[in-house]
Length: 230
Ligand SMILES: O=C(O)[C@@H](CO)OP(=O)(O)O
Image (cartoon, rainbow, N blue to C red; front, top):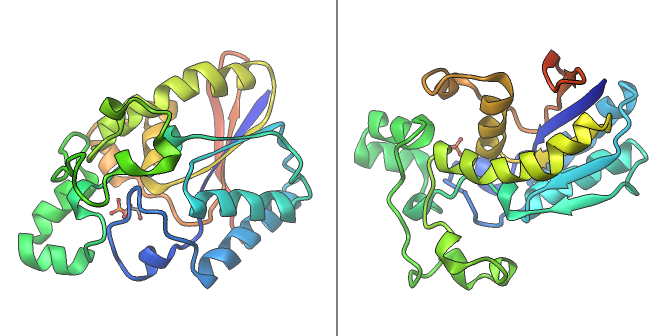
């Protein structure tokens, strides 16, 4: 009945540099731009037509959405940008190199920080440099809900109101939706949509720039899941 496409942004400058990114607003790399355009061509080839688009307030996801919509000639559709689709906030890990962090704290600790469902990273406080509290794009948010670090569980909790209030009603109304966001905000949403357990979600990875298409019936049950690739 309705279709939902999830797409993780194309490769970012910090994916390339192997750094924890989270809410830091880094741009796409040249390869990331190519991945996003390629995704748009796949969307065009598959004949996917969208009624609404959602993305985060981070450049890499916004640009990915726009490349996809431009390549598929639907840049005009209504879009919502919201912090609720931001990448999971990586706290004090943001900006650190993943390999160097593993050398310092051990592979197992870093794997837990990266993929455990409910372990928080070391937190940033509101007066730390780099806290999102001072970023103009979050000025309308209650400072108490601006995170200083999130696990996947908390990320899912802040994605859910958007799903319940804005996305699910559109899908139930037969509209097709595209969401361009981030590895972990999309893992959280996929966990909910596919009813994946807290343990199994550790193994789900989202590739950069790969559109994932869900078909729903009129009860919003998943009928199929397809990945678009070359
Ligand atoms: O650094 C990040 O913000 C994310 C996504 O690139 O990394 P990870 O895969 O470690 O969760």
